[in-house]
Image (cartoon, rainbow, N blue to C red; front, side, top):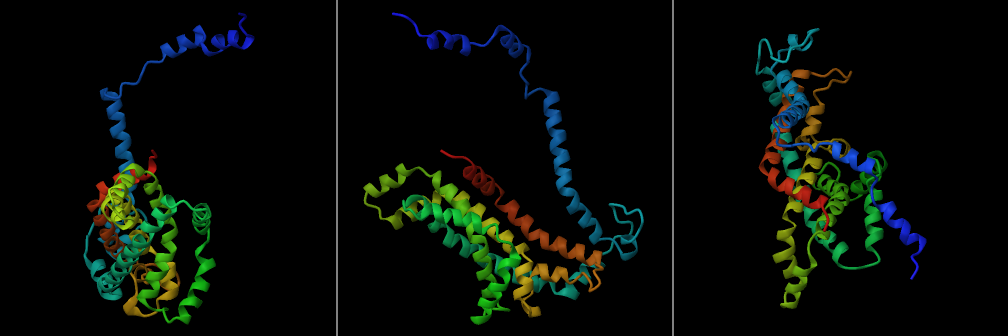
Length: 307
């Protein structure tokens, strides 16, 4: 039996040349446990942490500086004459406590409603095979390309007709509509990673679809639900543009609107009270992050992997 030309050429093509073997053997492997490598890793990590934390440290320093220090030509990180007057001005002038309470109510309700709608919708898109699944997911992605200014006028007109302008319920509804597409896209990635065998076994044992969702799917989706809830909460907590258009009453002002009022009509900002108020507005987010950081990290990793 004769051997074809392709069969005779394949081993020569697959086998690496001696020069290539020598080059590979000359490259020593990196010992990740060596002291030098560990020291470089710690230095890079420390530089990254300093890079991320410096704006927060500068804001903290600015919040304790009196007005003369804020206009110095060569500012310093440590205040020379620290004062609490900026915090007093922030609380008394703009009613930050009331604004923070409004933001907390709106952000919590928006996050809860967003997750309540997104979880079963994501499950239906992934598990219930339908020709609508791909068009719906495509529309979810396209909807994220719309800028605020394109939809704020139609939203304002619609909410005016139903009496939801200058109302917490209207603002919550807008936040749910705005964050729902991305939340749906996040959760469908988590649902795809759930093994079907567990659900099928529960169905064979006589469990209904609702029982499968409550007893199996929701517990397994908990990391993804935590990550999506945090995303929806932070989005509503920091949002400014929709609140500026829809909220007019001072008693319904959210925290970003209250902070914006520290900037005067001519664009001159009162840096001390503004930094104090911004720092106070950041603390709830930091506390929320630190409280659920393990669940958030697990949720992000679970949604990033497949299989």
